[in-house]
Image 1 (tube, rainbow, N blue to C red):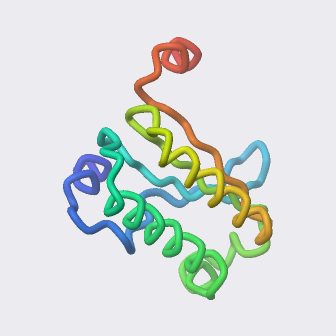
Image 2: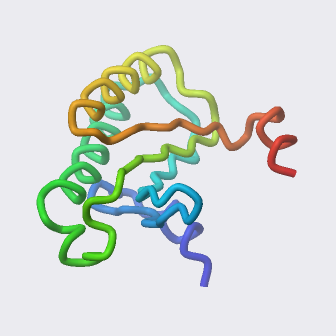
Length: 124
């Protein structure tokens, strides 16, 4: 069963954490958020993105992580947003604001463009 394929077909993914992992090299907790679709520059898209980030942060800070993975509590945390395409200008500005707010909670944000030819070459 291909879990990534299934999650990309779920319409309302607000409460879905796509992947929870620990980076064995850094000991960092990584929550992966997949956004494979093209950006449409809509208010609804930004609101949905905000709701997803709220769910990820809530998972980290409100005790859900401790219930599901107590061994990962207290590790440095990073949310990794994997996008199929480069976010549009509004989304980039919004992601900058999210980045700054997450920093107050000592959570880092990394945005990775998966269909970027230069990043594909680097991972081959």
